[in-house]
Length: 533
Ligand code: ATP
Ligand code: MN
Image (cartoon, rainbow, N blue to C red; front, side, top):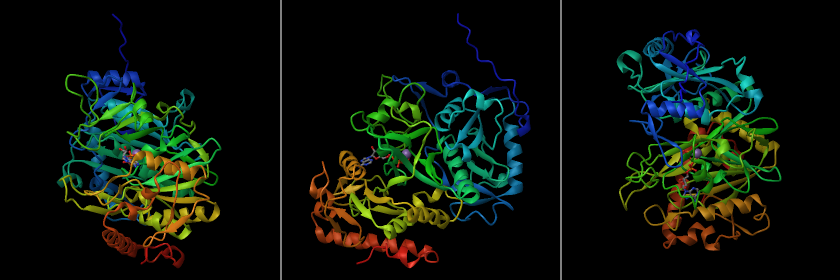
């Protein structure tokens, strides 16, 4: 019989106060981690070779349980509030000891990795997991060092993630048993009580969103990015579910990354080494790149099989609508490695407007670009009851406020400087509803959104006529290759035109109301980009 027993590593974690782990498995390969995950009964295999795992009680991030340690370093730099919730320094130290204590006698999976494809701004990570599949997630999502990088690897930031560890809110100072706490001074991200793997990736994103602008003047962005054959870079900003991952996977362009990027003096670069795509209702026909990426090494989270098979039923919402896959970026055929490219030529703001008001594609002037960047609008469908559900407006500054430790104005200022310096086309794309709001209309066809973005990228919208939107003032192309003209005008797709005008004014008013909180920063130039009627 083959004896392929994996030997635990002799290297120690005692510098972190972790002394008596059962075994420490250091930088295991995907195959080894998958063997462990199966043996530990953390997951099962699908018929395409992917590992299927559940994240437990939490099937998404828990923003109310994301804290930042408040100390002399962060006190005056972090933008404290509902998003960046302060955590007591001494309580962190106590919780850290409690957690490292908890790891005694456990098998630990350790991984050394990078965040940031630009070596100048790269963060060296050490991840300590209790779950093998989490460690595989980190292999997929962070950048993978070469053998020689590991010889003298010095850790800049440590993640300790132990989902089995439950905090006691009374004693530990958390809100409930789960938590993700960032300590920027000690350079530790502590996660417990939740097995949602995205907490690790978005935790490090938040760290970079602090370090890059604050310490290096580099703009960090919640966006996807790809580059065309001519070297023309495109970035896609957008809140969750607006299409960053879906639209950046394009057979005609090289993928830079699907979620987190930095913009320095002369380039943009991915922070990550993989993608984390939604798979609800995934089909090979509509999203072939993502479909084909779900092979050996990929993970599918919170999905279910077609009964009696090992085939994933992507339509199944039994566990959650937020079913996901993570895979290393090289699972996408035309991924760019290293994930770096030039200054963007086109920027797309993606919104999934469930009111059906925002045009499917429009061009923004500089004022409108700043205004919409700061606003960060999308509209979510509030509930799942059929028929009457009203969509809910969501404004999240810079299309990612949940991950921004600094005042959003800091990012907007950097964005504005870059806009001033470089000639960039900025487009607003509604990947949401058309023909009426949610309940009456339907979601914009993916093939039309792709055609509109393709036309913008190919310069095919440079010489068409534009009309001005009556409320938002943005410029709407009158024609676009492979898209019926009437689809381009949201008003034309509504049966009740008066209802459209009313809804457009209401949405405009919501923008203005939201923008009041930025009034100290808003110059006349930026306010010129506001809706008016
Ligand atoms: P997150 O930040 O959570 O990763 P995301 O911006 O990457 O979110 P996607 O994963 O790309 O969002 O999700 C967009 C979803 O919407 C996909 O499931 C996609 O199939 C679906 N979709 C439907 N119609 C469209 C459209 N017209 N454009 C883009 N996506 C669409
Ligand atoms: Mn995504």
